[in-house]
Length: 162
Image 1: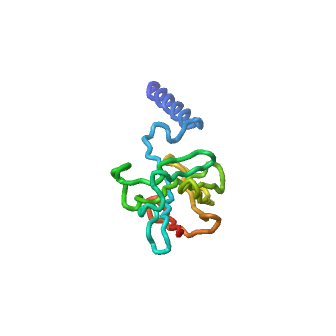
Image 2: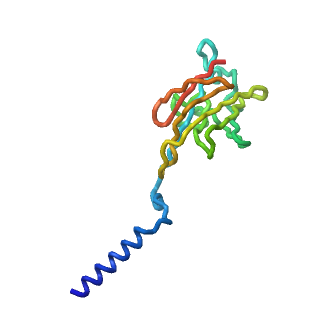
Image 3: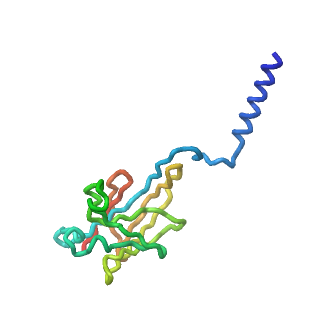
């Protein structure tokens, strides 16, 4: 009987010590699929024509800039990304993330002479092993508030008329 009690005590001590370790990462050892929230910007004219699709803006030269870091490409087609879905073709794609600010600004370089300014006010909604999810409070485009749509699967969309 002594052997069983000592084994039980040893097991309980190991269990207690392992449960008390606050230094461990709860996501450690998990295979994670980090989920990204994305804003899709469709740029059209007054007649509803997509200005990237019709060549008014050259898709391959459009890039974004945030805090001095440039991202290119931000417009995708079947040649660059064969599995690109229809809703992601001929639009500007901007990831939504905080970077420890409440509001952030993204400059969208449409060509050498035209730079649009996107602002997003967001709030952290939840944090977990798959990433931080944000609630979009407000989006501005060239200093005007613009409505956005939640189109599902962590994608949001705005339409800009030029």
